[in-house]
Length: 230
Image 1 (cartoon, rainbow, N blue to C red):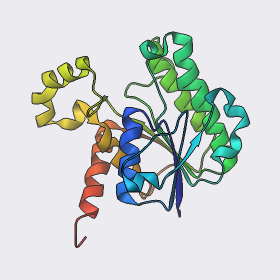
Image 2: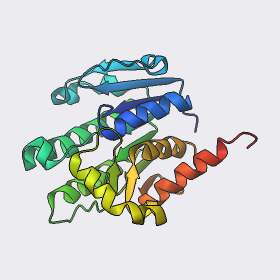
Image 3: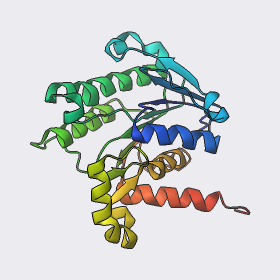
Image 4: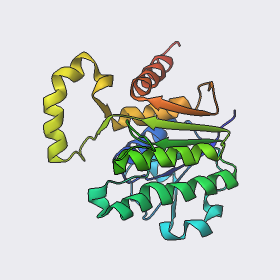
């Protein structure tokens, strides 16, 4: 499958920021477009080449054209109940927005749609966060994209954006991480690289769940093939 153009939505979040950087480094796509609420000023000349489209998420139903003509869509959009302010607001972002983005992409001809979900996603869960994550996974699968890749990382490890509580947690799990990093936290830059590498893998099914250990394997495979002489 020839993939030449891609968009990123959620590019101001922890994973989205790293994905934009990794896309600039990889030069995997001839055209990359950032779609979101606001324009970001980049110092890096490579990042400045990316087109930016500012949209109103509340008008996504009317913005199908903004998602038309891309081979690949990377959706890193997401929040938490605490950040959103209520269960309803959280669901509105993580389900309603993402669902409409998926519909727009399907209509616009996106061949490969990537979604950053979460470990433990389960549509039947009695807990809000995994329930909503599982429900949007199922809704996207029902859209029958040519290829759908859903990533379920464990706790994401931010770089300079880490909250105080997250930094404390990283210190606690550091000994375990040294023994088996794929079982504890997933660095956002590593997840981003894995997503890009996965664009060039051969899928065994049109819809796939990429679990945490597989994310690490994809990143490792990408580094191996990028070595000189390989």
